[in-house]
Length: 464
Image (cartoon, rainbow, N blue to C red; front, top):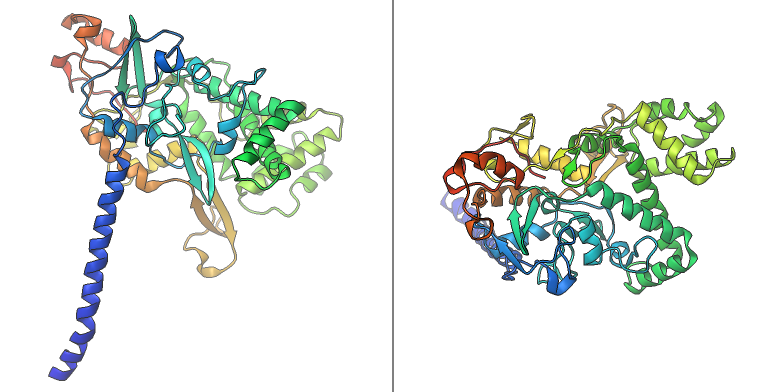
């Protein structure tokens, strides 16, 4: 018996040592990763104002920037501005070289970004390409994308007499709809204008992530179509303007895209195509449709409509309108962006209080937010039984539910919000506050509150 124990011990002890060493290595690696993530400590937290861009936020010249005491240092602010979550709006190389519509100036130029009231940044350690607050370089399956992070919608700024007051976790003043429409227009003109197209292709190829012009133009066509249809499907007769968005409606529509079946799509196609054309569009497609399959349907439908004399623009509008009538909701209820401080203290979040803030609630809520800002749901069919433990939503096919959603980073963002506090009223900039009138004034100024009121105002809020 003792010999057996001795023999087992000879194998177990080395194994325990290996496990212990592996745990130590992982712990050290985690510490190094955390240290690296918070390396950027630019004292102005990367803000670009008059000396870099000439103007800031709505065309007002800014002489100084002020951050309020909210419990975050420069490390955490810059981390929040640049942390990725899995948003794949467009290829990163495209965004870096894209020109504005009717101009040869870069789309991402600070003075242009300022027109949409996104917050321009200068280059720092964690943001070497000087992307605006909340616009980040993300990656998925070996490709780099420009996408949004939480801070794009939840970083505010108030300008007063040449001072910019930056508010972490506050509502953005941005016009997201205007930004996306302008982005689509710039891409479309680039495809149609020979000179612009030549410059664009040359500049993209110079960045050395595409092999040839054909590959660049194929991606350009794909993202133009996706953005064009997104804009039409989510069009609202109620203008959003600055600082407003129907996030619920747009997220819901993005989720609906990924649960469409062949049968549901067939009903929609019959509203504008003949039976023969519908059969051709859906040939070879079954069950719930993947993103590449939806792209195929769009292209085939456009070809069918243009064969009947429509222009491509008319064909896209016809298909988008049918999709909106038969499948999607009207995203016509814009509201202000919520602010994020005090979020861990709430049992339920969102403006209407429908989001549980316990268990998997925050991850589900934030996953929906990532899908809404162009996260990739790369669902694809699997033939092998052991490919996945889940079946498709129609109960027939086995599907791998891959996606670009970065769950780890979503959890990290939630954790950082524990330290974020509501900002105190800056008397040195805005003057002494009349406490009796502070609530309506605070509401007008992105949630800045008086010292006596800190944490006494608890609106329903959400992360995103």
